View (cartoon, protein in one colour):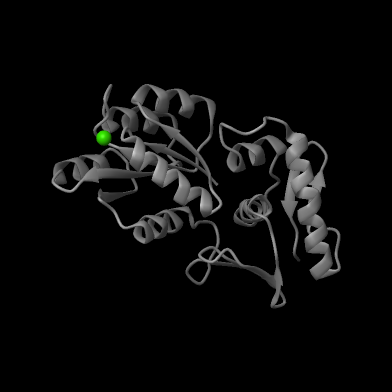
Length: 224
Ligand code: CA
């Protein structure tokens, strides 16, 4: 899952980036509205954390423009405590949720998880497909109760494929949702992660076909 943090206060932006990267998200940061708009044109985000008061523009303008092109990207307004009108206006403009500064880190993480949960029915924060369980809070993955020890990138790939179960995900889409702006733009890097993820999956399941790659279509998760 790829997230954009739009926040002009560098210390808050950096703290958010650090926390969210720890949760396995690919995170980009925009310190101005201009930067945010540029990044949103280039990249496809799953969720955007949007500060309202920005030096060059405001979050409402960004949100309105964004909603003209995308109804699916999740947006959380991040507003100062006193600005209740901002939150109402933000929700009216199509934000999915809001959080008040100073926010509690656990609350922020939970709100993001809640918004990103989709397309599958689960116990809260557990994706269960056949005999595989992915715990989105602790990042533990198991198959028939045997734990898989995954790197953060392997974990992120698996979660993205699990959340898009039944669909083929192109290398480009996968790359777009798992890696952030600073990373090396080579899909060969991704193939290495997929190779090692497949190997680990094969070790616990005895199957080599959990992640299939259909030429021209992309990767998909196959646990049936
Ligand atoms: Ca601000």
